[in-house]
Structures are given as structure tokens and as C-alpha cells.
Length: 115
Image (cartoon, rainbow, N blue to C red; front, top):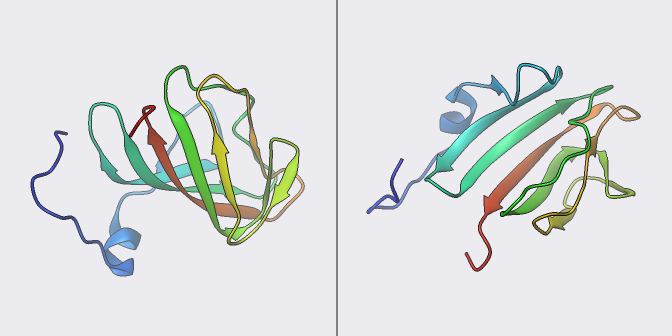
């Protein structure tokens, strides 16, 4: 998808109607809705079910920005709940871990440096 030339507005109903797809078929309990994307960036809403996690990983080039909408997860050693924000620089190992919580919903941005 190319960079849009006009604004994008999604109501709560529009977001809820977007398909909730597995982030990766090999990672159970983690799904997301893609709000917007282009060749190097993505904005989405991720759901991690209680008792699940992504697994430790690092993003080679992009920064990962996350805002916890509801629930809680352990991210880089901190339990982060509603209204909390996390920035993970490119190359930093991290996990989004809801194994000890009832799960969470996260708004995330995956952006190249300088974006």
C-alpha cells in the first residue's frame, strides 16, 4: 500500500469491522487489525489473549511504539497497563507477555527511524 494522499478516518465501528487476523499462525493467542500500512510502516491494534505471549524478538530496522488500550502485559521487565506507553528501539530484544494476566489490547506503530 502506498502512502495515502488523503486522510484516513476510522470510527470505532470501522475498526471493529476490520478482520482480526493472527499475527503469525505459529503464535497462538495473538491477533491484530491493521489500521494502515505502507512499504515500511504499520499502525494496528493487537490483541494478546491471557496466558499467551509473542516470544522474544527484535525488529531489525524499525522502532516499535505501543500504547496499552486495556488489560496488561509484561514488556521489557515492566507490567504495563491501560494508558501506558512503551518505545522499543530497533534491535532491542523484547516480548509482549500476557501469560500472567487476562490479556491486553495494544495500539502499535512500527516506524522506521526518523519517521
